[in-house]
Length: 352
Figure 1 (spheres, helix red, strand yellow):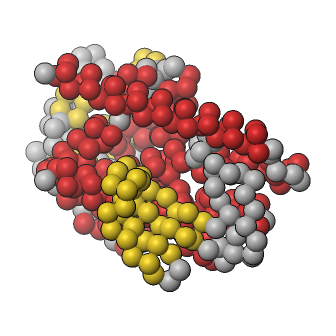
Figure 2 (cartoon, rainbow, N blue to C red):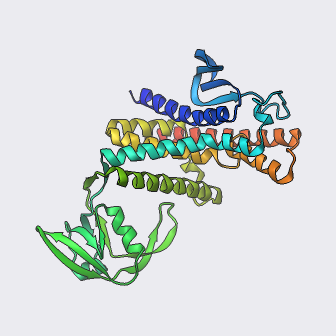
Figure 3 (tube, one colour):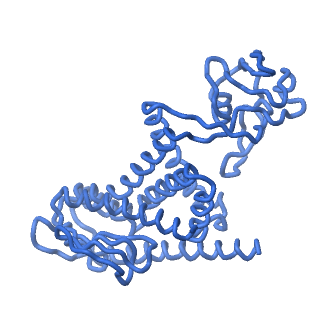
């Protein structure tokens, strides 16, 4: 069942990505010969409105084949206003950007659905108070529930950390204890900590840890729009930073996951709950959008880079340069895929 869920989720993500390219291409009048989910031998196909729609044997991706676009023949010129290569560079950029943008839109829709159906978060209930911490000195106890900090209403544990780090000076904590509301004044201390990338940082802290309790937050449609926007932007920034830290060597290459890891994550999420499946699908959709925008030849971001070069210099890169850079891009992508699979297999054997 997990494998089927993985294939369905991946097919939806690929379909939405390629649909973005397809719709933008058709908007500018470009003929799309093929819309494929998967690569290799086609398993099913149907010709509809001038396009061959198909499912192929290897479901790890997809493509739209437009008239006048062929990475193996960068100098290809097909006559007619319906040819991709005859479009203005900015129009080609829109067509290229539309794929990743569609993934961001899908993620936002999924986050919106999560907000309406009920988003699970850690409860703002204290599970541990560190010895000699500002919280302990102020009288905070285990099982206290934080309901407000200054004028900020607290519904989730995440809000506590954000409020503490984004404010200055002493804070008024309104605590629910034994069905009574009490107020404590706590002055956070700046201590050593780690961010999500395990980098050492200085951070305002009060010395508390969460209890293992979840709370479900339901949002109104207006609140859900804000939630979806914030989560999509937050996820995008996190993935961009993750790529940057990987390039810098801060994140070890052993952390790179492949298709096996993605499949397991989707499978585990589907077994956990429908909301969890929506959340991981949204995150992978953002991931797909961000990674495709990287300026690597062979990816959408690489092709956008070529078109920006054409806008700036008023000439296309030579066929030879285009081919060499595209081949280099495929080598980079192939290496990353092999690294991910290698790491996946290592994790399996280590666990075994």
